[in-house]
Length: 289
Ligand SMILES: [Zn+2]
Image 1 (cartoon, helix red, strand yellow):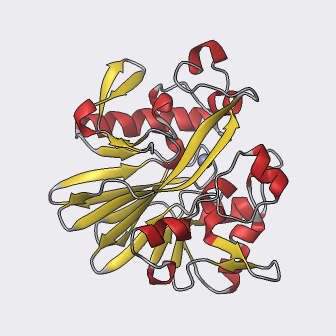
Image 2: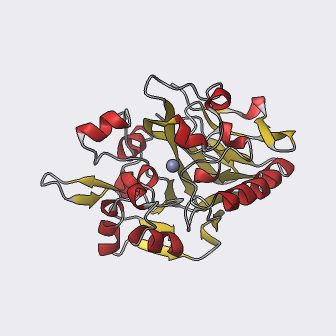
């Protein structure tokens, strides 16, 4: 599903819902009691909450960029059932926006967990993983690639080599260390925390600024600084980076994009309390359909 675009000067940003699925609500909110989180994210009878992957199609300086590939389609029927996974994917979402995946020049992945990198590859008729974006360079933090290829035992289940090894074989991966401008007005910034090489994506033009938060702040419920996910490998780092980046986004009125929120793709934010932020109503981009 293609959502309302925004223009930042010459940069066009179009959110596209590339996946819709469910994950255990407890795992999405770590130590926070269900009695608190279920008001924000209602659970089904299996305790799962609804999540999107809200990707971004970005056009700038004559280049087409895609941020976050989503879950993709390489799942067994059993996995589809466990994640209540819908059959949408990145290629389908881009087609709806009128962009064939082979036209994409750059793909930026915040990290390599399968719900973010899965859509980078699909399955051939013989069941082999093959690139979905045959011409694209993939921008990934060097530390993330190392972590995904030799994962910490706690994180091993979150990575699927079929999502990135075919890209490495074809020389499609460009690793980055720290911050870098990867296209006109498009910057990656390493945050770590959720994974060793997690990065956010910043868009800057004369007319304003936007920020794709990835899993640093996956949904609007996570605008509470201490609502951390069980998946966060270094929770204290996530807390510190989240506090720093949200304070700056509020101060300078940056539009922030939420990767996993099922109802809100983007919004500006204001401070609600010393430890939480709320949405500025007039700036919300809906992600429901
Ligand atoms: Zn995620």
